[in-house]
Image (cartoon, rainbow, N blue to C red; front, side):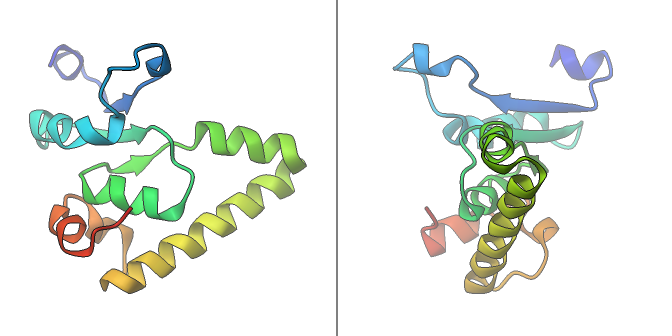
Length: 124
């Protein structure tokens, strides 16, 4: 990957503008392939429709080291400035905690690359 060769600290898997390509694959569907191609050469970040805590758990189980909250963050700012963002983060945190409790995982870092969780628990 050329970006790794020139020293990229991370790769972001995103489909900005993807809605113009209605036949394009979703970011979540290509995430495992990108993670496999990158290996341990750099981190992979995920950006693509994160709206719930389960989405974060899914992305991390598929190998993302972190997720980006562009639209959700923007909506929270528009709704109630800093309090809106705090509320968003509280909601996501609770949803992540509940989801992790259901699958028997205590730390987010323990999710990275755990595709077996997705297959056995059918998270959505």
